[in-house]
Image 1 (cartoon, rainbow, N blue to C red):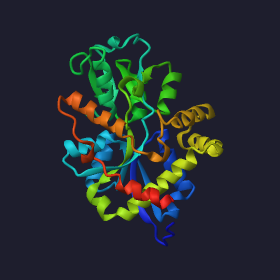
Image 2 (image 1 turned 135 degrees about the vertical axis):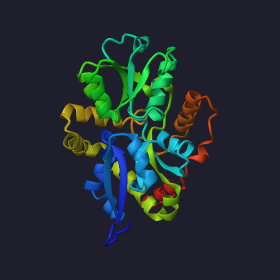
Image 3 (image 1 turned 120 degrees about the vertical axis):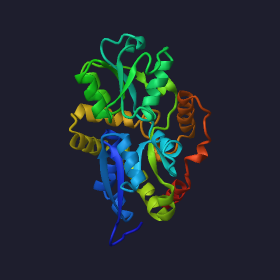
Image 4 (image 1 turned 120 degrees about the horizontal axis):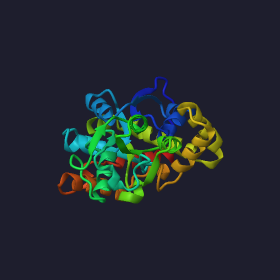
Length: 307
């Protein structure tokens, strides 16, 4: 391991949700520091903030829905590369109590982060399966991250639905909203959040990037080692102001590799192909090759560091 006298500062942008647990663990338990890194977390209100920060150089690495990386490449014409896997999103499609079937969303709004990426596309697909089209049968209301989407549902019943993740799904249920199902059940396997960066930064900082990935995997392993469950739950309670019950339920759901974190942040290629297919379907284009967006050589070298 690297024991640098002057650790390398890494600016990592993500969103406020319980999936930030490995970052808190990595910082507090010293996994990043032992790799010669000082991770500075920046929590944002929307994925647009993250994309702008990465494009401008304010962020070195973003941990967020990989569809944002795809959008930066295809729409923003930025040379962005996905370098790890991460998780399946812990997403569920939540609706108001007056929604008995998804057709009841007709004439209302669906709260989203950004209208053209990630979970907004999942929402469009789910509603398409029930004969509803955006801008015709409903409109998208771009309010921001999970906390803001939940707030919009609670404060304005015209927002009929939103895709939420942990811990907001649990809080939505407590507020009387109801889940219509997990998005992985509704639209199939999905590579949700992962680490991505500018390709030029990755090339220029390959050693730093590999140490970051190794430390993140170590943090993930610690987080979901059963013997650390009580301590990890306590971190969730402290950082997210959750009750013990909500923190325990969040932890257990994130531990499910089909719904939460993939072991060792392994990249889900089938899930990513579904991301690309979904984007192509919604946009009326042909799916592009996955290799355009990913470079897992950094991950492979990081895993060798762990051995």
